[in-house]
Structure formats: structure tokens, C-alpha cells
Image 1: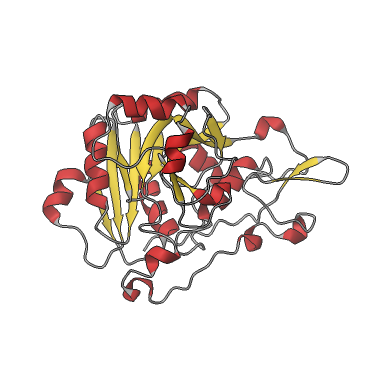
Image 2: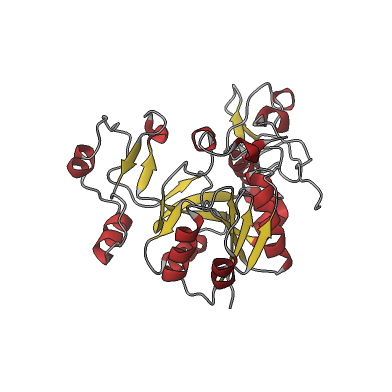
Length: 320
């Protein structure tokens, strides 16, 4: 039975083959289908596509959000229970990653999306500079079972990790930690099909690959979306979490973001300007002059918690 549609939006071709081939290596091929939305200039070779890709969509670069939506739409039509959007700069590193991820969904019915954890942790979450990463384990071509056990147990060797890096790792980094984290950077979010129907697709105003994830998170966490509610009501809360039950390696920022785009052919970005203005979607003027955050709730001076409100339109271009 097919359980997962996994959508890869790409604008370059040097990472996608490794990502997809590692997916096949560590996942039951009867449980998933692969969609590649190819916005690169050169494209992929037909022999490789025929071997690994179930649906190949070739289009001019229109941004990460639009490319993701193109694949999501096909998955929704096929009634697949789980739909993932995956950055191409990933490597699947052990079998059972998919079964482990499904276990997290079972822990709380409010969870509508789950992302695996990555052995390479972006330091900006702990006050480090952009481009500084904390390696729980360095990347390997082959991980052994003891590596995966070490990652899952959440009790890491602080001295070994600290000695690996030229910068000071803040005390806030969880050297001892096991569980889930609410919210995530969407490098491999796995959504319940029903969640995307309720929340809507990625907003295609966002160009090139930044901001659409926080907007989606906020829609999930706001109990005033999609039905407008003035008061916070617990029964309408939803969660999107990253889990330490499942691990996939992410190289980070190899395909999206300003640094990656500087290395790409400028022809990819002709005719479209960058856009990342969440305040237009979550206007302060209807939110007590406050700017939203991904958890989409605010607390007033009396300690009363209320949800942030969003404009009703989600920007999605018509199919062409």
C-alpha cells in the first residue's frame, strides 16, 4: 500500500540523485511514490527519471512554494494519506526512518505534520552565527546501527561534540534531550493529507524559499485559521513537530536561500523578485499591533492568550 507521496522541488541537479537513491535504499519501495518538480536549467536525464521517478514535472522556475504545490496537488488527487515536501540536499541514513516517523504521529492526535531530526544542527537556533552548525555526528556515507541508537537516545557526548567545532557551543544546546520540538524548518515536513486540505497549500507569494514554512506553521498553530475565532480554544490547536524518533541527514542551504542562489545561473531568477513579507499576510493592524510568530498566539497585559489572525487568501497561481 502506498503511504507516502514525497515531492522534491529542485532548481539544480547535483543533489537530487543522491537524495532519491538513498530514499530507495532505506525505504520499502512499495510504500512511496516520488514526484520531482524540476525547475533547473539543464534538467535530468531520462534514463534516471524512468528508473526512480513516478511523476516528473518540468517547469520554469517559479519559486519553492509553487513547485511544492505542483507536487502536492497530484498527491491530494491520488488520495495518499501522507504527503512530504523534501529538500534535495538530504540523505536518508537508515531503514525504518519512515516507520519511526509514523510513530510520532501516534503520540498526539493534534500533530498534523512531522519532520525528522538531523545530525547537523543549525547554530542560529542557539544564538550562533548563520552558517555555523553543530554536528551531533559528522556525515558518513554509511551509518552503523550504533550511530542511530546514539542519535535516538538523546544523550550526547558533550566533550566530543564541543571539540569538533571552532566556536563555543552555547549552554542552551541540548546535549541531553529526547523527545519532540514544536515547530521546524521545513526541509522534510511530512503532512497528513487532511491537514493540507484544512490549512491550504504553501503561499506562492513567497519567493525563493524562505518564509512560506513559518506561514504554514502559524496557520497550523492558530486556532483562528481557517475559521476566524476571537478567543483561543484548545480543541482547535494543531501541532507540527520535529522528532528524535526519526533521523535524516540534511546538508542545509545547498539549494535554497541567498547563499545558494548566489552560486546559481541568474537566468533561473529572471522576471521574478524576491518576496518575504509575512506582515502582509498577518497584519499587525488586526492583531493588536503585534507581529506574528510561528506559534501564532499573543498574550495581552492581563495574561489573556488569543490567536493571531491571517488574511483569508492564500496566494496560489492558477495551473498553466
